[in-house]
Amino acid sequence: MTPATLIDTFGRQHRDLRLSLTDKCNLRCTYCMPEDFAAWTPQAKLLTRHELVRVVRTAVDLGITSVRLTGGEPLLHPEVVEIVRDIAQLPNAPAISLTSNGLLLAQLAKPLREAGLQRINISLDTLDARRFAQITKRDRLAEVLAGIAAAEEAGIRPIKINTVLMRGVNESEAGDLLRFAIASGWSLRFIEQMPLDAGGVWSRATMVTAEETLAALKSEFELTPHGVRGSAPAEEFLVDSGPATVGIIASVTKPFCGNCDRLRVTADGQVRNCLFARSESDLRGILRDAKLTEDQRTSAIAEVLGLSVRAKLQGHGIGDPLFLQPIRPMSAIGG
Image (tube, rainbow, N blue to C red):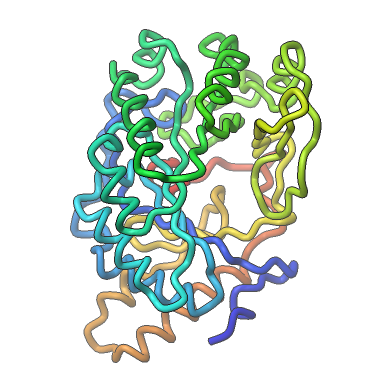
């Protein structure tokens, strides 16, 4: 096995693995799933802690250098701290980050940091408690803010805040959110709403675009392009000459597919070479095939990961008139 296994036909070297721990979530954000959503994956189909780490171990041997734990809400996994520790103890351990809604961070930030978590992204779409309840269908903004504070106290750096602006809902808060993030020492990133909601209500016509977000911010701040983007999803800008920055992720209107280095494994063991892919490759069957030796299992996992990467398309094709939304929503894919 060599890192060349994870180079696709367009020359993109894949170094970043997004690993979903669960499809379950304790919020019901309107851009992700309906309030009454309950179509969760049966527990027996979800990868165990040891199966998840087994996949990471092989992926690292193939050249993966960064692992982001996702969901659903990854902190709902009962062994999330142990998973972080197991990955951190691997030979040539990758950098470990996590994306969370922050609700359980007050209890878990310190043990996660001690286990080896290095970075965290936290979703926060509003600073208004009533609007938070409107967006998430849960009155729990105070818990999110307490979780962010706990992450800071635990020494997790940097803390990145992910915000989705929605027309007629929270788009007026762009400036307030940026001021709050700068004052708090957080790195704020605005993300275009993507066609990955379980309710199927996404519409390009009603989406707040990156261009609109930039225009709103420029009416209140001086923004200067900053740094070399590389494979990072966010285009960064210095705010009022810096040092604070703000990121814009234009996944829909200005995709960054040409430099994408990400590979995804869902909580039920399916490999996806793109967030918007409509096909998957199974790892769960390999992990649970009792007839395979460990060497055979390793080779089979490596082969599936390599084939998935080499089958990757040049781009996600959202702008194509024939584009179809993925069958599975974001919560089941892992962001």
